[in-house]
Image (tube, rainbow, N blue to C red; front, side, top):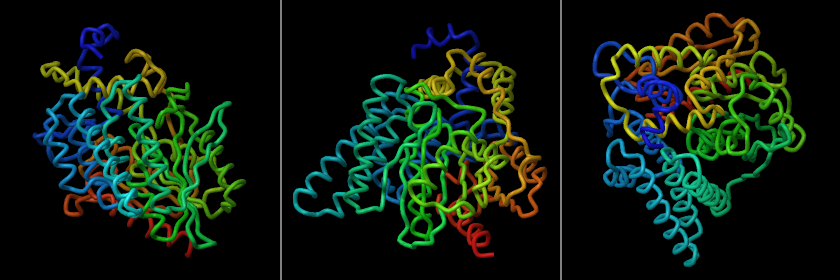
Length: 419
């Protein structure tokens, strides 16, 4: 998106930049007052806060099969800070390199190594499209990512069954990982504003599977590439989640009462909504509960305007802005705010067991909403976990320590399903 085109959208650069940050990465701060859209309390590699968050995301996927530390840092060394195209090209090239390596090893009969390289190719393509503009470039990289992921699942002999949940005449794509344990409970993982069901495998799906759970990961409206098919973020997220659970029960024999929901980032809103309506789940977990997304959007705009609009946004931030509007089905910031205004969850409706997880370095708005949600829900069985800097998991959705996210969830699930 050219900057002059952006200016025609009907608002200031500062306002639109803040809206982008509110739905994507946010920013670190060097003073004592965190920004409302903060996501990490410290800088790791890039000055651009959006890039820094998703660089940390790329690093955090290493232990479950994404790029290893040396690989991620190599790719980062070829990226110009804040330059969206250099990010897209660097990660795309590395995906191609890993795919070629996988093909070489597969031809030699090294099936395991081929699958490992293929999964790294997927992780590279997944990172690449983070700053790709909606349209042909995004679609092309996304197609590569889907192919690489499906091929890796087969080469690694993962128990992956791809499915579609019927919704509004279309399909919500997902994958079901069947645990060998016949009586395994099912965890349904719902990602956030910048996610796809495949990357949830690296975030926590593989770890959940290894700890004895069957795992379903799915893209709701506005996630993955669903927005390209006319499915945008919706306030009544419980409806699309119900469609997914229908499929799990009917096709995969998931047992009502043995199903858990886990929502991450904006997924913390989606599952908070479902917690008030869906009777087939035994518990809901969120990092973090996010009952009022519109609150964050509005505060972020105000912060940007009050700050005086002194720093022009990077191209990466502009791409984040463009992508967020696309997922909401909006063309202007005003329309974006309008289309998300009804995204609110009612704490008074929630009585089932609920786990709330918060990183201490996350947005103060996320923190305030998570604490209020925990206090206000009517559940008699609930837990609030605050992870500080000493855990290495204080970032948004534990982006700097994904294992800790799984550990907290599995500990809670053990108490729910065995207690």
